[in-house]
Length: 391
Ligand SMILES: *[C@@H]1O[C@H](CO)[C@@H](O)[C@H](O)[C@H]1NC(C)=O
Ligand SMILES: *[C@@H]1O[C@H](CO)[C@@H](O)[C@H](O)[C@H]1NC(C)=O
Ligand SMILES: *[C@@H]1O[C@H](CO)[C@@H](O)[C@H](O)[C@H]1NC(C)=O
Image 1: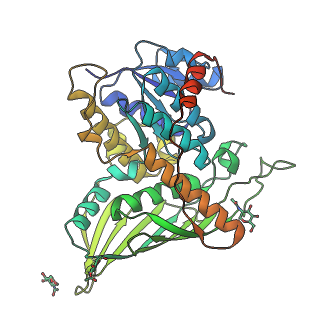
Image 2 (image 1 turned 90 degrees about the vertical axis):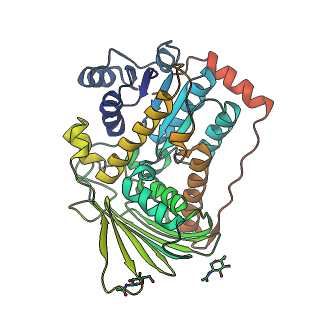
């Protein structure tokens, strides 16, 4: 039997998650939004029986066992930590927060409640092309990995209103929103982590038709960074949101024997002795339509990410379905998902890249987390009692 789900947020991510969860058979019973009206409207639209702007009204419900969070990044850690403290499983959408510190709180809570599911939704890990790429790398197709090159091109419409995506402090910007997924998938594919990074972030569009006057966009719209990985590979990434048209994402992994290229949702290979690359995995586009995700949400989340999320939710479903008890789950189906520790690593790299952008120097990546102290348990006790509501 699948657990009841409470969803947090009114973002495009939540608008995509809900239909996917429902098709997979999860009962979605409650929705939280920071504004009553938004929450009500979206709940009606997505056919969810209950909506509220009070966090506890969802978390304390007996019929909610799994909490899915898709909020502006700065407000996610609080809900995640509180949900775990109350004994709910948590799926948190990426990026985990604006900074490393937020992810640290989440890691401490996840370590404190190891029996609860606490996963990050880095969908690319479940995209069939990436899964196949990883398998081929593990089977030695590339030999030792040398160079990873990633290019992401897209062009959003001019922003209509000032929201978290315009604000670096709330977790906006191409580095944090797209780059975090790339940092995660590189580690997933190569099993290597960054030791040193160098980065440059630019904000070329500071004002738009609707955002002008004293308010300025502070989040980066162009970013390029390099990483040196711990077993000798290097990575160079370009994230460019100034190229209107189709979303383009290319992940090239070169090894001593050849290379693999994930272009969108398709996979290509080229051996050293071959004169051209060949298509080895083709992903038809129809999947997202079948899951009833609204066209609007589909334009906001790039197709490879959405496909990945669909496969991830299916894996979560398998994890719960393999157990008789409603609250129990098996680790195996979701073994390849990112956990909060992975999110902490990613967020640490993001912070180091931001630092490098400021100092104009290579920056060391230092993932450290304080062990949960008795105090942090008190903190969650406090949180359990509080009636904090996020604005
Ligand atoms: C691959 O890497 C391993 C470990 O770094 C090294 O021992 C080995 O010689 C490398 N293989 C080649 C063909 O360079
Ligand atoms: C390239 O090398 C692989 C393995 O070494 C071999 O199986 C394949 O036939 C070669 N292809 C060409 C076009 O020579
Ligand atoms: C990147 O560095 C420049 C100064 O070199 C700074 O103006 C800008 O705010 C930095 N961007 C971010 C996102 O930290």
